[in-house]
Image (cartoon, rainbow, N blue to C red; front, side, top):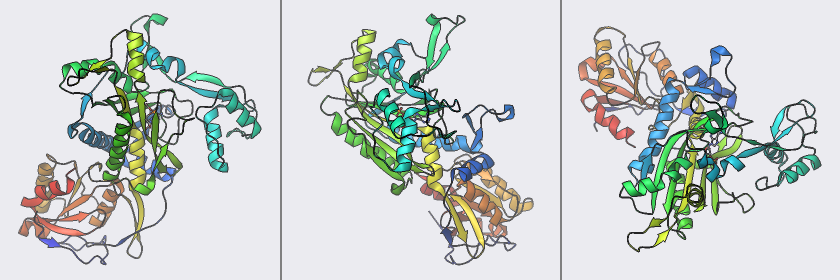
Length: 494
Ligand code: GAP
């Protein structure tokens, strides 16, 4: 890595009226106002991260389309997860199972009988609400203590009535009895729309892993303990989706099912909790934005021995980002019972037979997408009277790694920049901008989180070097074009 010139004058302003032949110099940024969900949604729409789904037809409630930058960010999140959880892992292998599964899967997993939300209708304005969410919102507003999970419908109804929890829509507190509503999306396979052809869109990717446990153990050289990782779409007919992309009906999960020997599960649970925590920190997620919340006994699912939620401090408050659960041998046992297939594993060393226990870190892509944006967003004052919005993404998450600015559109400078763009985009996700002053171009890239901006100026024709400006420090260095790829490789390695 060779840096031919380092700019050290950090007091100098990044003047938008740049000198003719060189790149503008450096500013000193200072953080200012906090992020709101309105600001974030506007930025996402304006810059092509996330658009409302089917917008020209008036939209379809809570569906979202990921624009040119959104798809890059999403793919980068998934690639970062896959790299650390599969490629670099000594324990784990991957899978891509079908979204549509034999409905017996959902009978075995308990989703047909129990994957439901407790719904109540407001008798005043006829709106429908989740009883558990009404209470959760109320206790967080009033700072009360009440554990919702594990409570019966009667207990939830009683708490709502006793505390006169109001309808968020009309303010009255007069609700119907709770009805359970199954969250699975139902459809039909084939031409007949009868009960025999009913299939479900999977509500989690995990079951595709459990039903393939034997296939994977048989067809690969993995030995317990090992994990199977999968990234894929899941669907839930959420009654109260919302908070932008936080709770949606169609989302992607990155799930790991880690199979281990009974009695080693709690050790592995703690191993994966730590691994996941470090992975988030390694992606630049600030620890002060994270909270690890252990489920207490009442809150634990019936199959789980231990569960920890990683919560993130979103602009609307703390919300679940990642769930890590010790699922015991529950799932494999259920599938063994319903399918009749033996799910035992024969330990090749000890000749012991057992049904493995499972530790599951399960993370939503959209949740981490939202958390990454919130975590990266800063508004800063620069110099005396300038401001900037900047997304300080970890470089591996940044949609574009490099932006190339020719100081002059045409002529030799333009040609040199064109060539550089063609060369660099073979290796990195790049963009090119010729519009407006260099200062304005910096601001545009700051707002979408591009870590490095490269300016090709008149001096470049002479010294075969370019100015690289760092998004976060705003410092500039001069680097020879011949050294550029190695310089960027070094900065962008993950
Ligand atoms: N296999 C376990 C499982 O699916 P979960 O807690 O229901 O557990 C795991 O979901 C993760 O999936 C959550 O922590 C969250 O990141 C994401 N997730 C769940 N429901 C979601 C929804 N409606 N919209 C977006 N992400 C969701």
